[in-house]
Image 1 (cartoon, rainbow, N blue to C red):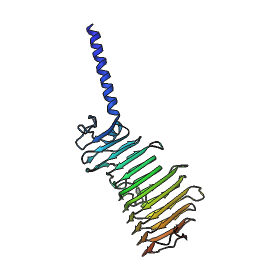
Image 2 (image 1 turned 120 degrees about the vertical axis):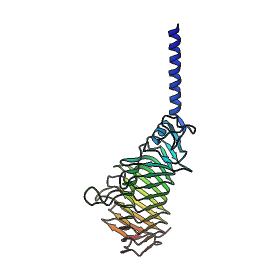
Image 3 (image 1 turned 180 degrees about the vertical axis):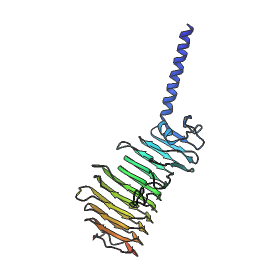
Image 4 (image 1 turned 90 degrees about the vertical axis):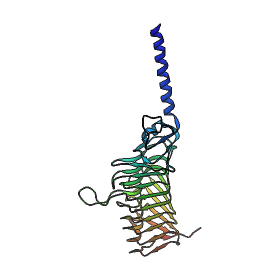
Length: 320
């Protein structure tokens, strides 16, 4: 009889443990703290220490909140989720690889707000997004090889600084790698990016904002109320490979691309198109650069001035 009682007691303990673990995994709200521990339940009273552990304890559509400033490690996002740091600094530091990797379904939504993503300089990727809908709000992305790399899906970036990414030297030789923001979809996919009130500054490598359909697919980018300044090569570039059916289009409105080490705006390739409205392109090595059948269409209301070579648009479009 005693053995039966012990067995029932043991079974009850196991069931309670399973229910406890299941509840922890399904939380809609979790927390991280600089003083947290991954042995905790990720509650406000008992926060976790790392973003990855908090992610794994958060249910689909839930939110991770940063309670106080700290460094919380890299995270692989595989579901709809929000990571929010408001009133605190949520830092993700990476030496190699990715700070935030996003691999989600087409209808999943990921929001990143108030985060600082940083690397040791010219190494690693801040955010790599491969599908779904990604919102990046009020973040700082700096010191990496590529600040933000979009491979598929929809991207919305606002009130964010992307700075000091990329490298002008690779390995033991010289070369350029990385960039500030890269939109380069996988073959056959479509990537749409909306960049609003974004500062892209002092990036090295291949440019500040680069829409490159070299792997195929279609790219549609809208840049508005933003500043692209001091990048070592091109400021804003649309590029498609020779003879490809892929498309790279960028619409630029009320934006300044200034003091870049290459062109302020570039369209390279027969399916590369840039529309330019109400914008300032100044103090670059070249203002407008067109190559290999690319198109820059101006609405005739821009200031293209004081570049080493201003260049001229392919065509002027009448405002409607």
